[in-house]
Length: 379
Image (tube, rainbow, N blue to C red; front, side):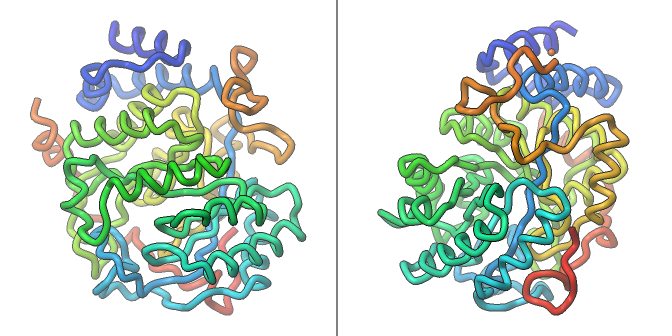
């Protein structure tokens, strides 16, 4: 297929595809799916070999968020039956993080619900970062605390944070449809705050919220322009009690096409398979490893993921290997010591609806273990 040959060549050169080429990936047929995965897999292996980076989430403060993000079970007015608790103490968070590190995680992501941290919150998180680094000096720590004010990114950096996550989530033109309490521009500004402080920027998207193919391409192109080091791709988890609980717009095949498009547009960044992979990819998760080079291990913020051992088995069975703590994730030209060449190349909205699977609410399980409970975490 000429399209795929062109995209592979551009990916190996780190050249941006055209919007038309990116859109065309999303409209390829199921008959061509394995060809699409194989082509994007060549780009993935060029820059990251067969390594898979493991990340582990610790939800420092769950629920009761004043923001109205429609996709979120922690949002203002949410009726989802999730765990709700205030800030974990540093030793509690460190213990939760240690479980993920023991399971093979190279990065711990510290997340807290809310619009953004107060200066006191930054102090809290700084102590938590210190506690984690004291136990596991080599672990990467990424903070995800919402919108940052001036100087807060610098304080997190000084405390030992390695990265900061703040997702764009969807296209600028449709952002107001999912959130009204802050703006798309607010999110962009926070990512730039993190980059300005010397933190590794992590920013991605959520697919499956009813967006068009054009929206998906818009947000991925915006991410390419923003140039984060890692791009998490979330697939909406339609939790009962949230406004988007009825949005079941994804099939495993469409999810794989989305991941392939992201890889072609962002060839040399850490593309992370994030929330919703078990719900929407299901038994086709191993194919996604040919597109992404990073996944979350275990549970998410308010919902459960598959068992950590199952994740490790999947990686091994698919012929990949867990990235070690001493290995740089990013290619050398992005500030890492990674692979480069040594590692080895219709109407969108209606078509998405036509291929949508029936709702699988049985695959969404509210988290009842780990941080904020007396039960052992899933790692």
